[in-house]
Image (cartoon, rainbow, N blue to C red):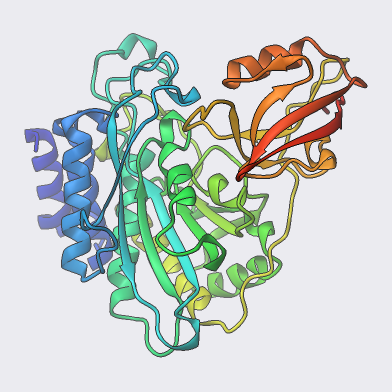
Length: 416
């Protein structure tokens, strides 16, 4: 740990006279973020020793909490990033061995076969680069204290709270810290394809992304419209917490909940909104509101208890994926590509409701191998093929679906 982080953590824990009163949760959250967002973690970039050290820290924490290990590697869901993956293009991460960190709090009684996933991504930008918003700082460690050490710390704190709080019949809770979110939802996509329990048993996914900068009590609950019960449940729980709660929206958005919503799972993402340090080297530990995040962790734990113990599953609500408002005659298909691999074509994680792809019968899991006159080996081939067509064209699409090859007819439209 750097000298700066040691001093900050010392002040956080040992100087209550000069700081707001610290709850037990906020102290633990502060210690977790101080470790994850230290310069020694290399910005938690893919392929760095710091990312591996962060995974080990999370696994040790899960072990101390008493979560069950779901894999032969213990808490690690280890995999290799496909060198042909669209997410690996021009980044150099293809072939990197990475890991999600997964711990399980087993359920009890008739609800135990159903699952709630509580997650956050623990990777960040490393030394900056194309995804950073401060190009002059390339080569300098980007610690990502809010994005997303804060979310990772929230997952661990909610696990601590629930370990001692849940009683009686309840669903199984799977805690996941994902890798590779910054490169294209790599870890969460892999988990959805390789869940620890059959995916159709997962009833809700609760995601934390950037929950360390609570200001004026403003808390966003994105995805609240993905299940009919979510908004009244959130409002009811908030009566005790009194956040300025904005509960609305679909389940898409650029974070790991989108991987689950594409698989027709209701989702909620808690978020304390963007700020001027986002994706910049200045997103550091000193900017974190640990008191605020402690309150958010308590709210999220209460939400998880309600979701784990209510008899009925949340009622999934399908909301079309927002598309950029583009008109004109350019062809639009409406597929959601899997960015983690190119298995001899473009694998789909889903299709946009009401799109040409949906109307033609394309499905999540299909591997698109031909579009009109063009063979499709990867996402670049697919994009080039679409450019050659215009709205109104009727083309044949060939997909691999399980062990079958299917030919579907699609009428392309313009987007927007």
